[in-house]
Length: 187
Image 1: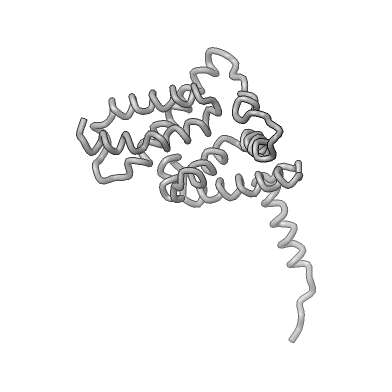
Image 2: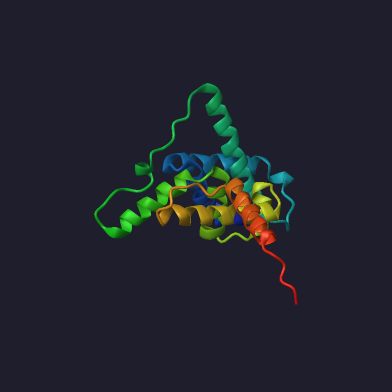
């Protein structure tokens, strides 16, 4: 293994762990996922092109490994969701309650939106890096982060309705229809 590859691998490990935690919502499973992704990357290091985005390459490997593991588990058994209490402990302190509420709201987000939000907000990835890591268009990456932020805000401010893309499109259509229905003002 080249020194540069090794150095980049060591530098990316904390960020991979954060992504793994956002995907698995379990510390032990996240550690296993990172270890498996690193093993996959080491086995495929010959396919990495030096000078390209190592971070996106590693995040993509981790995400693909997660999806593969998830498919294998679904084939062999039922997958139970990790309870929100496993993510954040309850406590009397207000900060802990806010963190618990946020963790529960994050758990309710669709996986693609949760992953996008964590990678951009917590990891500081650019939308281009997110798009490369998740295999989608930059516009799709931006949309996932926007929808995740908007939905979290709605839930955290006490609105129980889901703000899905369908609901947003319907609202936009209604607004446009209302705008078009106004009588034209003559000059």
